[in-house]
Image (tube, rainbow, N blue to C red; front, top):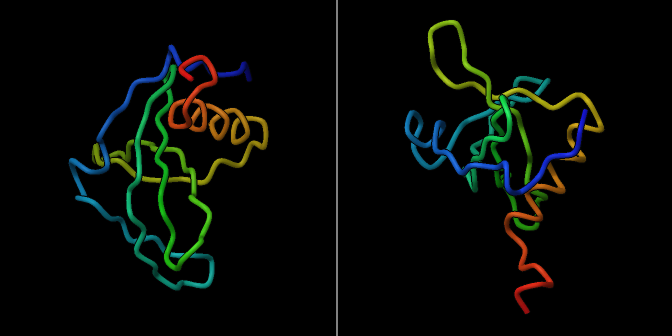
Amino acid sequence: MAEFSAAEAVWTSKLKDVYGETVELEDEQGKSSVYDIIAEFAVGDRAYAVLAGPGRGAEPEILRIVVSPDGLPELESIMDDEEWEDVSELYDELTLPSEDSQ
């Protein structure tokens, strides 16, 4: 997979438009947790969500947004390490101040 460029990224609100400011996710053991939707963006033909997990100091989760057969956005884990790394770096690039602007 090619690296993503910040110039290609577009901020979106697919999840927030349908579910509001939070989503409830279930882990492998069936335990549900509520996550705040921090950001959503699309790059190329894929869309991603950044979620704040429950508890202080929890690392943000980055998940892929897919569309279910009934047309609703759903979240799925990013299983490919390279894709996850590219998306994580892109989100940092989009949200952290660049050295050029200082």
